[in-house]
Image 1 (spheres, chains in turn cyan, brown):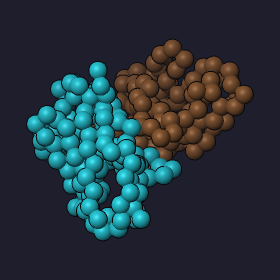
Image 2: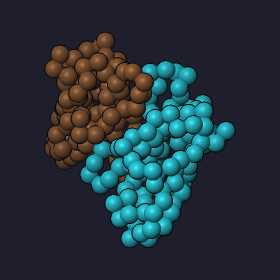
Image 3: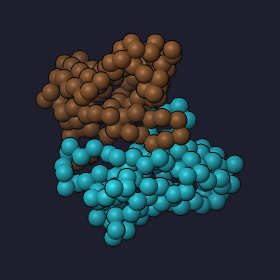
Image 4: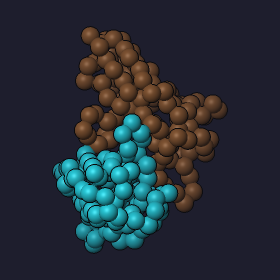
Length: 115
Length: 112
């Protein structure tokens, strides 16, 4: 039973470029959340997708956008990259059908470096 | 993430018990979680406790919840070098938002 998988594991981009990160949720999960974790910080919530729609959004600019596909996998897109976007991007899946007690299961993340 | 407070570092000797503390903000939070992050990896769910409980034990892990003081702790018995990692406390608030809020994490260092 595969857990949450993310690709790529590492990425180097230049300021102003655009990036797409990908996530496949754990089997049986239908909800995907994205977090940004800067060095030495806890994960900060970006947004959550359920039924192919953005259900909740954190305090991130519109440069951050996402998508969820019918198979529940998800993408995170970041446009006009800034140096401050360098971070570990974590995808987490859960099951909305389980209600409040469905904990998040995390992938190993994508390390994005913006130069 | 700063709404959930944790001390940044904890150093213990192998074989001793470790106690990692956390204070959270919302007394009506429904679930409280402990996650572990090893270098270069994502967050691994260790355990969680529902707000109507005051203690939960799972092998070497004991979670204590004091709702009055909004204080959560994680005790690791017989700490091993493999327990060295960053430990995150997270709270899940009620209402329309089912998104856990994380603290900055406590870096646990276990030395021989």
